Length: 417
Ligand SMILES: Cc1cc2nc3c(=O)[nH]c(=O)nc-3n(C[C@H](O)[C@H](O)[C@H](O)COP(=O)(O)OP(=O)(O)OC[C@H]3O[C@@H](n4cnc5c(N)ncnc54)[C@H](O)[C@@H]3O)c2cc1C
Image (cartoon, rainbow, N blue to C red):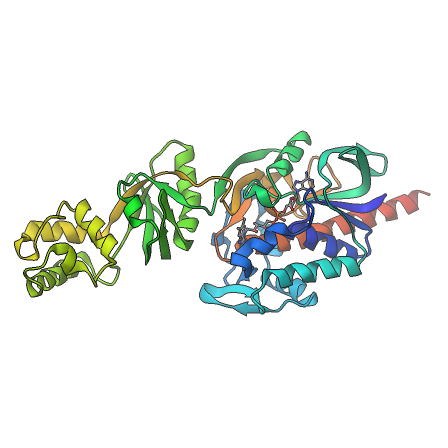
């Protein structure tokens, strides 16, 4: 019998296993894939954005309010930084406070985790899917294909449902449901948005760096700025990924979110109208599309003119009303969001085991001895290192709880002898 079986060898599971083994527990990781940490290797475009300097609560979402004290501990930057440093990974800070391994290699982070797991004699059983957790004498018995594993405590780190080809495909939530835990509906997030926009094929492949906002019925739901990349079906890029969470929320209740891009953030609408008037006077004799080349990427300019109904115009022929209309389109390029790219491409899962199901040590309130960490819980973070911060922080925190639980059990058993 192991002291602890960790279900899932992702970031949260490996962190939990290391922390528990450092505390003297005999630990086994059961991982359904042929290797642990497959998703970690793909994070941050292979550079692995581990955390962020700004760990404000506003960057974490889900049933987070139910977990306020635990969040402070599990999302604590110092603990997680110390965890990584202990296994040889120092941070380097890049844009917007994002923290990466100094070598900028996700493989370095994974290798460090695997080396430490080996040093601590953690048993790793790959190609081992846990399909059932049962209470048994002295702890739990876990169904792993034709085999059974037994442990005094379990840490459920089976992730969410996003990016299933790298492992997790919703099994964690299903296992939790079999234990009667309340699970919030799962939705994909941090993914591309599909747009209902007629000119996408023309724009596919173009990248612009602009502020982007999401609206529903003229109410702003969120905004962000950065590179927006057009695809044949919609848009991608960091600000879009961050807005996908709210877009998914609106779509789930059958609303219509609107994506609004500001193509000329450095000018207010009036200043932009003045600027365009002067520009078109100066470039008299050119078509409007020619006169806008150099101000906007050509294809973006062409589509903007189509949206303003001005595509066939010469610069000299543009009226005052038309100038106003063009400036308005440039300041608020609007397209209805028709859907999200979906689970295959989503980086994270919104929803999961409701956080009211766990104690402040991340232990299940219904099944004492089962701890939960990472994406299986209904906590998700913004793009920028928040999800790995939560995965590792909650893994460490749950492992401390599990190790403590086992210790208390032993003391009770010895006292009753
Ligand atoms: C392409 C991509 C890029 C990303 N980039 C970043 C980034 O740069 N920064 C950031 O903060 N976040 C990033 N994320 C999100 C982040 O990777 C996840 O939030 C985090 O890895 C979740 O960790 P986890 O351990 O909870 O779950 P996972 O990493 O999903 O691990 C769960 C593990 O459990 C295993 N498993 C599932 N069910 C069972 C079962 N029944 N039995 C046995 N094993 C099971 C799975 O195979 C998997 O290995 C990215 C995600 C993706 C997909």
